[in-house]
Image 1 (tube, helix red, strand yellow):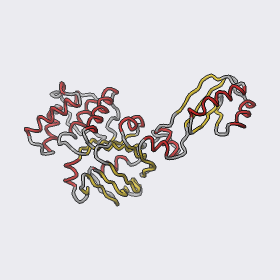
Image 2: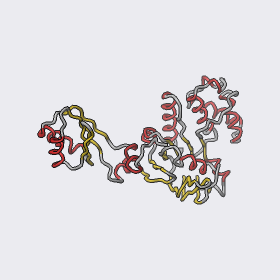
Image 3: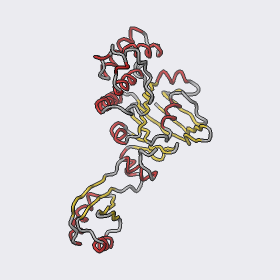
Image 4: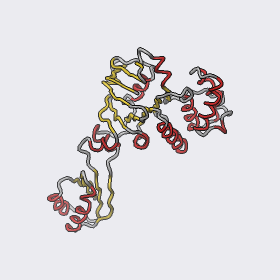
Length: 308
């Protein structure tokens, strides 16, 4: 459904994209996960034909985005970070306007508007002016505008920024339903929990490059990532730590806690507890830190996911 090949894009002396490539089959939700400024919005802008790359190409539903931009646009719905609505118009009139731009026949458009409003939970507010809406409600109408022409592909650029939890959960439910119906979704975010919930595969992007991609399980096992057991003690001393480190090499002391690292936490946890008891350490608290996208990103880039 989507083929992105060796995309490169520069803005002056800044290399925004440095050879981005990925393929997405129909019905998959592919996440682009990375900090602000990593290049996510530039990718969406190229895929939606708003800007052209310096090198590389994009194919959507069999159409090249540079050679056949109109055919590509017919097959995609775009949800940008910036909300594209008219505040003085009602939600219904906004959808009439955008549906008209997509040249949806009027008899069909009214039905699709009602469907979209119901899907996004806003049927009862359809005649209210958008300026009276909350930020989350505006985001939901913004998504509705991208669905009116029944696109095969939905491009979403951080669609949940600055919204309330209720609207966020509703958007998640809508996207999960759309994916079940066979719509292909490209979803950019810097929130790891969104990518973990929604995306079948994830591309981790940093400084204009995809540094890792795959399913969550593939990302976990692609490198030497280790899970962590963090144990705090009431009587940790240099002497007791010295005894531990003789028998357990992969650990680190931080104040009154010890971080034990392992590829198989379930297999070693009981052994660690027994060893601590032998040494005479009194355990205060045990925390098991599983591998997630945050730890994967930190391991790959050396910085936190939400760093600018």
